[in-house]
Image 1 (tube, one colour):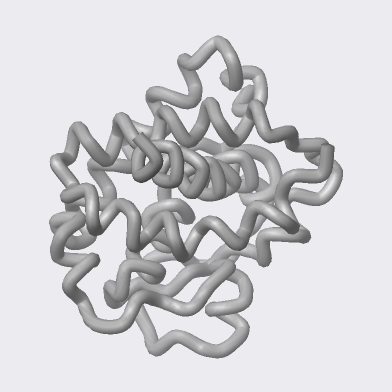
Image 2 (image 1 turned 30 degrees about the horizontal axis):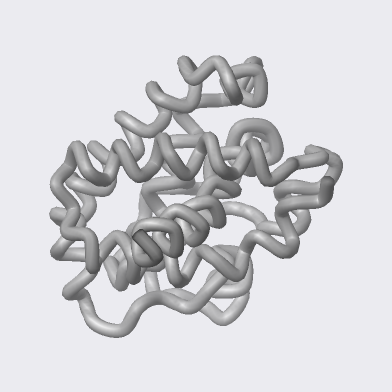
Amino acid sequence: MQKLFRAHRIAAACAGLALAASSAYAQDAAPVDAPAKASPSEAANAGATPIAGDGVYKAFHEQAGIQRVMDDFIVRVTTDPRIMARFQGANLPRLKILLVQQVCYLTGGPCVYGGRDMKDAHAGMNLEAKDFNALAEDLQLSMDKEQVPFRAQNQLLAKLAPMERPIVTK
């Protein structure tokens, strides 16, 4: 039970990925397709340095698996009555691209993250813990649907957890 609670709390941190992308990232116009070597500013913008090696990336079934997770995740958050209003007017195709980039990068994959840093991306959104909790539940369901092993989920979530501080402002 304690492991499940810890995983849920850490999962809440990743909720900021979608909340940030839903409004702030929708305005970004940076190129999004070309993989390249990560820069120090990319790690800062992505919110963390990537996990060493490619084991977690492979456990997520590489970029195609991450894409499926995020495709499912976007459907869930845009239909979840607790948070769907946060996504009204969002550039959903752009949101998916940035989420795939960020998760791919953080799991040790070859992707380059082209979004803004977490603090700037979430500025003015007045996010609360309840928003994070709803998103965390949706993300966990999406990762489970892709059959991402629990250990790999937790490794990603551990990278995402510290992002909560600059994201939740209420």
